[in-house]
Image (cartoon, rainbow, N blue to C red):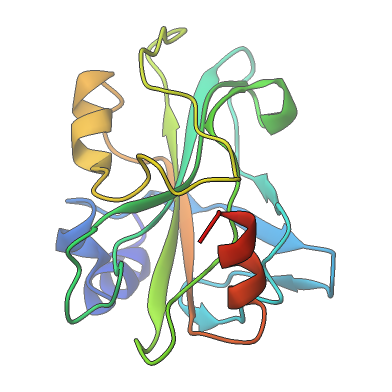
Length: 188
């Protein structure tokens, strides 16, 4: 395991707030619209930059299935994370790295930190599945906040025996002018 990954995830509190050990390697998380950018293990991006679903890639094993989780552990703020964790995107049964062929449990929602709550951590984690998952979780659209807050990565990982993340990445973001547009999309 890359000790730099351990340091980055620990320094940013992702260990222990979300997971117990850092991913073995980076997942590439890149956006092409509205402008080209990428997550680079703790860089600062804006909600405007990450409003659309990114391309996420990792080193995959042929024939394996994966789970992708994106969460914000700082909802509504890092000082008062009473909705920790807010799920932004959950996809299971991803063959290799083809997310479009996976089963979306939670549709993608961009970063939406409330005004005056500082930087939020947006964490992407990839888990190799022990086999095909049959999930009983309610499917969540990107038009509602229902059932997104108070979600627990650890509980989901334990329920489906996913083990430690094999890849991951994260970025930081705070409120910008896109957030009210996102809230309107979510019915707020």
